Image 1 (cartoon, rainbow, N blue to C red):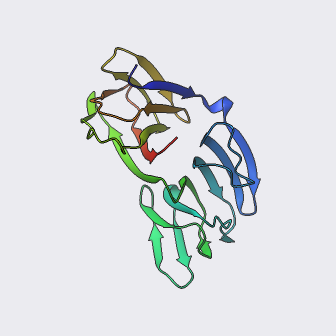
Image 2 (image 1 turned 120 degrees about the vertical axis):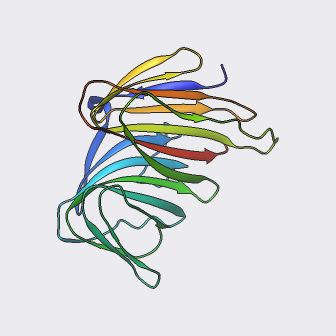
Length: 208
């Protein structure tokens, strides 16, 4: 198979506390990786910011992409830049920077080591639609790619060109791992019901 699926339901996700609120680990690579010891290539999490002012956990050696899901955050990266984020706006920064936040919010986080690359996208799903019809370049050095889909609100049914289908409810996560080499994966997303649906996609490029 040119790619594999892995579904992580809400009840199977790991929840813990951080100094400013609560964090939920959605996925980590490798699966045996450990966030506390910083032994991982990439990690995806969701967090709540429950204090009006807080300091982010230092993550030297990692890049971070943060997207606000609810509320508003003002981020100050000491010696670098500042930004104000509302729902579904994002910021990319070095995890080693001293970062302070103001505001109450929930957010989605992608963290990856220096030998990886990652990005976040958001979709408002109103009808059945193709998310992508793309072919990757056939280069020996092409890294693997993991596409991670997180259902923020509503529910969707996803189908790929091999016929595999899966339903996602709010809080569920789907990982689609593609090996090195050329692929042409088509993914269709269909909204289930009439509830407004938001779907996040993280793409992580890495060497296993």
